[in-house]
Length: 128
Image (cartoon, rainbow, N blue to C red; front, top):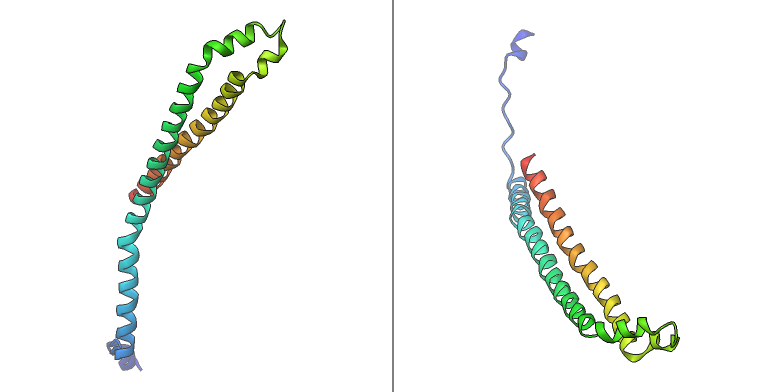
């Protein structure tokens, strides 16, 4: 039966339904291939834009803290004789501005770090 082993194998001719399925699969793959970089880069851009927004808000809060620095310094210097000076209106504004500054600075920096990590991960995946 060596004659059966030497027969060439022919691939079956795909039916129209199979060809349509192949076209749909190829179109889906093409869409994913085209949109994945757009999605990734737009996410990185969005993180950088929101990070910039948070950094600008943090700078605004730092400016508010700078404007109140003299009155708060005076409150701290007189705190031993007037403990109520630590909770004056200017001191409370300073504390709120300091808390907002820390929060916005954290959000701004973390957005840039996340964008950087996303970009680095994309480069690593690209080089594989």
